[in-house]
Image 1 (tube, helix red, strand yellow):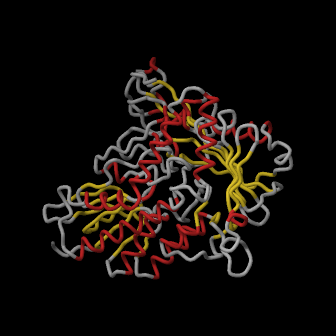
Image 2 (cartoon, rainbow over the protein chains, first blue to last red):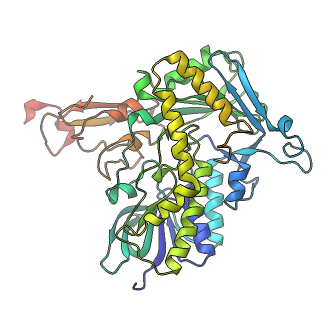
Image 3 (tube, rainbow over the protein chains, first blue to last red):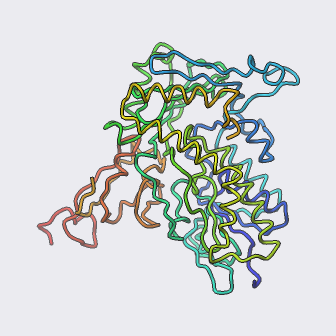
Length: 391
Length: 82
């Protein structure tokens, strides 16, 4: 292979891209990480929940720079407000809690600060970072490398690299450049809206509200957001309602069993996004290219959570690429399928299984039965005995 | 759900929260985007599946049918001009 400008060019400096960059740079690869934004993580499209285990496994310190609030468990509600609580302060009091020698189960993070922190760690490991830089296209070359076209502050730049990593989120253009089947079904993308509010008390738990009445096709949530704030949101599937998420969120706040609790809510921020409740992409690689994070749809199909899966997938991608490039192995004609195989065995197979469980629930056309199934599944999912608790 | 006739999308920017859900659901080729993380509003969409309108959390995407391809999108809604 001829000399290239970089070993990796990573498009998108979110959690997946920055984690890939950090591990790759630490191993000595020459990495360029680009992001089109001027401020990472903004506008926020995410509720920000991640487990302590997820951070630890990806080598990320639970740094106060990005943590809004520590989490100690879950409360799952049915449509009428009956709830199942898994409070790990009570379930495993020797391990979890706020006292000395104990730790939180997870955190709600500020995506602006979290994304910036992860980018900073990548830079300190040796990654070159360009903000205000958009990916425009890429072209595999006959010599086994590829070129990547970028636009940086309106200037067109073409660079050569061995591998392009598409970490450009749910709206990924990189996958489309390679002609991958990236289209997601309308029945599997939840339209989400959330408010950061003052005046709503929380108890260190992630609260999940099921029920077609409140969030058809998805669920509603109340998360602690630090400083006495909370995050109230929901996601809906467009084919299961003729109203937008905004209408459902207003209804949830005004009419649900939480209406008294929410009566003094004062809205501080409005955030939204599309959350895939879908299977991972079937093909996450092409010549000289792999996808990570939301771009590869590395998102938990039951919870819609994508932070843990993004940083875990970023580490898997980096570990794979480090070995693959050091061994001088080919990068075209299907060679990078090996990345996908590693990802499937380490993480993806479990996500496919979750997708099967989720699909079974939402294929049930009987709303009352479906509500019951979703409540039972969510309640079980977050229990200490769940086989999926490390996802 | 799909319509044969191309449409030109319009976004009520006052309500748009730049969430990107419309781009995420869009079956168009790469590049059918605006500089504000939304679907393109400066050229017609020939697929016209309208999924972007369905997914929008704040219901702020609308469209007009494009009767004929003319270079200036502002004019294409008026067939009498062609």
